[in-house]
Image 1 (cartoon, rainbow, N blue to C red):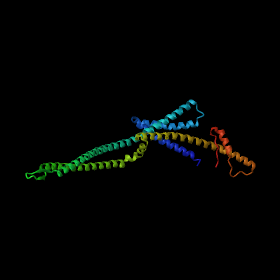
Image 2 (cartoon, rainbow, N blue to C red; image 1 turned 90 degrees about the horizontal axis):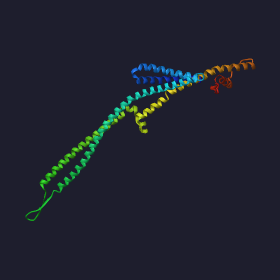
Image 3 (cartoon, one colour; image 1 turned 180 degrees about the vertical axis):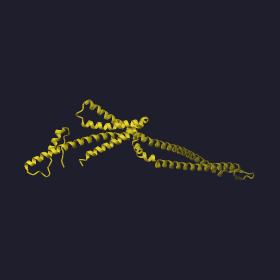
Length: 316
């Protein structure tokens, strides 16, 4: 496994760098859409040059001048920033399509919510008027019941009767009030049904639309953090690009270190094996069948060839 691990690291770095380059190149091409083809060619060459420069810096760090070293480090850093900017532009452009759909959905919900509020206000007005009509009906009913007139006739007897004119007026007002109340009942039911239909439409838009499924987790996080969806997406993209291209460059440098250590071992181990074989031949007339590698000798050889790579090497 330790023999193929450097290749695994190298493959991961190239794959990550290639993916970052792809998104960066197309992000920059959208940013400069007037010359998209030229930007794609230029950015592609710069991406490859960045990886080569990073490898060159690692391998020749001690042999190049300080001026060249400073310039190459600055160039790699600037190219990493450009790549990150291209990725940012690509992801923001991709999010804008979802953002437009989200705004359209919010507009639809706002219109439905406005209609719902109007129906609710009308329903409250109807209920207030109904209460007033019910009180008037109670008073008119009581007036009809108390429509009594008493007078004394010529014989001195007290006569109790009702006023026909007053009764006709009260009955007319009662009928009008009752009719108005019934009309308000019908309107209240219609408004209540309209509010229920609007609630169902709003719920359907929120649960069945594709954009709701896409931004649902982000909206939940935004609500928990008390931030807008755009702010949360922006921070998410920044975190995403922070570990994208920089990680690719770091993995490439790590692969260089692993390959360099592997090359040193391939040079040192045969020398140690040869020394042990010669020593064994002096002690015994027959060559050993399975020579044992001395860890201290390998470490000394490594320090002699590359002092900065001092480490303890364990053999299988």
